[in-house]
Figure (cartoon, rainbow, N blue to C red):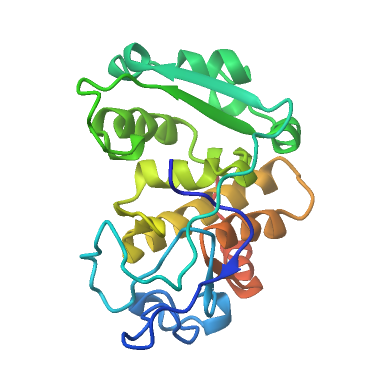
Length: 251
């Protein structure tokens, strides 16, 4: 999988003959949120998580290959975290939309049974043993509709799962790619549709922050913000203040 998320790194500058659309000042990530102070949420200036590229110009037609020789390639992923929970899925599991491998590996059978502490410490990862019908099919795993559908069902059942993934090994990147429209680029890896990624991140911020608070986890704002930052977004305390000021009953 080409998408590798680690800590946010500066984007390499592109050729001087072409304007770099990513080096733009921080701005609200949606016109619909213009009433919020910029400090609530913003795209990090000149930096995104490794192999993620925003495209504020709106030109989403990005070539699979890039001719620029002075730009860095996608870094390889770090090894999986030791003792992480490993979910192994294959064609049969995917075809049946069977979540049993997740239940078996993690011990989480219903959403309410999950306690964040152990999973945050050990993290969760996926091994996808997928056999292509055509061995020459060049598509990445995140480009197969049946695989994506399996992850859509998993995310619908456990919407707070991204915060528990093995981020350093690229699991958050791959998970997002399963759920967010994107294109593949040989240099940058996964290039997400920026508006779709914005909606995905904000939905996860609301879900994860509330879930961590419900389980009395320390520093839920920090953990939630770290997750969003891995996807290239900064979240200010003012947004959390608004959430806390207008709580939603979960009973």
